[in-house]
Length: 302
Length: 278
Image (spheres, chains in turn orange, cyan):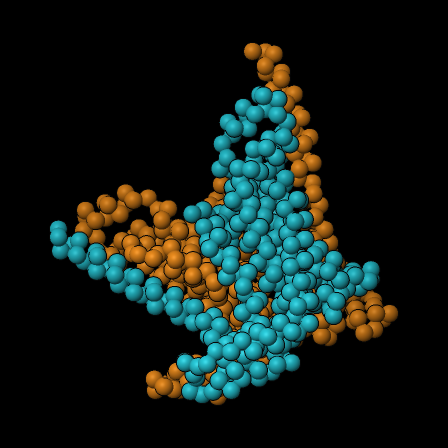
């Protein structure tokens, strides 16, 4: 017995060593790809650094940050981001819940329908953006044609100042509500059966069951879906850039697009570095808030 | 009792019809892309839209004669394939260590790995762009391959950790009693038993890399353009040639169409970092 114990200890210490060899490549790679860019952006954010005049680079303290928060453009991009992401994610959550519940029922062809639903999510966004562009065309597009056919008024869609964000939300919702539907429908399948049987015996209505049993049980799953989608939505690039490039004017310029344009069109490395730091800060605040409020951490870090 | 059952059956029917309608609406843009790709240039822009038309393959012929498009297709395959291979070589042992060993602050490490995925790509892109410029690596496939590691590494570690968790400890223990080393059991037991998980994670990673636009739009030039960049440039060349645009789009989403059947089973897990299983 003693002998065996000693052997076990030796084994464990050997395993200790090997754990570092197994993990080190991942950790080093992730450090290179996250900490290096973070500190670089931090450094750039306190420089006056314009790639057009790289020799005039100098330290300017927090001036880039002051430039951002006193700049109307910054606040308007922030508003656009919240409008786009807020509207989109809430819409997707509602659709996900509705269709997810429908998938909870028994019917033929369920698996095939679920598989087909994945397509918008994995199809190349740049490619699907173009088909939306073609469909959105005010004079030759199919959407306005159908709307007019059923007696509704067409829209300018992505060409209009006021309609551009709702149009992008349509595309984003088309692309990502399948994500919500899949998560919620698979979450529903994993729920315990007993509360539902009890509710049936007590004669609860469908709505009562939904409100008092399904939604509370689904809460951890809904919050995972919400956090992932919200963060992803802040970073939306492909569909906005290839459909509108931030236009018309600046009407669809989210913070993410604004940073991209500042960095790679204006080549203003210092200012875009500062914007990246602000962006990270906002993402962190929101993530922390959502995690605290929803018990997300327990459900993901089992 | 009987009427209650009848109501249930009716409700199931209604659910089916509503879901079917939603799926058709969701697939409409893709169906429209496919039909437009088979229309000639007059039919593709006609109003009212032509539902029935003489199909033509001229758009595909024109796309497949376009050397930029062919090169981009090759570049996309190379970049996605190689970066994915690197991700698996680095990430699979990491996922194994994270699942099977206990060490100090393991939870913190796992959460840190997850949090790296939350970082906006734009923040990663800028410093690396400047670095690649300094080392004359812009417009090379190498720079893209490196950047695409960031797309998939954290995801792979988290998802594979979940797959490894499902393999019973006892299998490894009995192998080790028979003298199998830790690495031996990783290669002989863990990897073969989780091959389905590895394949579906790899497919998902391949699609993410294949679809990437933000990294490629900045880093790729004439020599290394990937498909999304070329598809995006088409709008400039082809402007109003909707047929060609659609044909290019159809070719670009083919991997997704081929793979959805296989990924479907594990997609929820992949997209939620293994937080949810099916």
